[in-house]
Length: 53
Image (cartoon, rainbow, N blue to C red; front, side):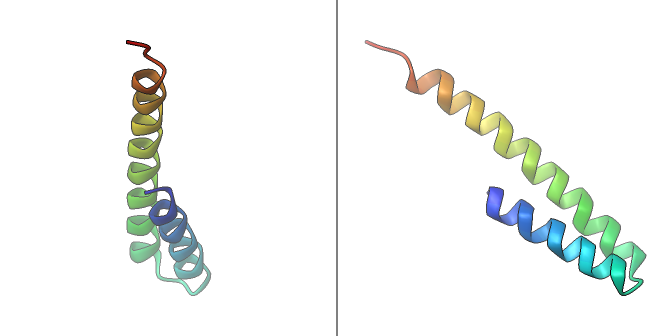
């Protein structure tokens, strides 16, 4: 999922360079959402992975 966030950030930068503002904003917002989902899932996996039964 972090890979997709990085891909969308790169896509947003390239679209911004070429002047496609709408595509750039859309890709940046998707990248931000994917990054936040990745962070939440990472923290949840750290918490649940450290439990000792």
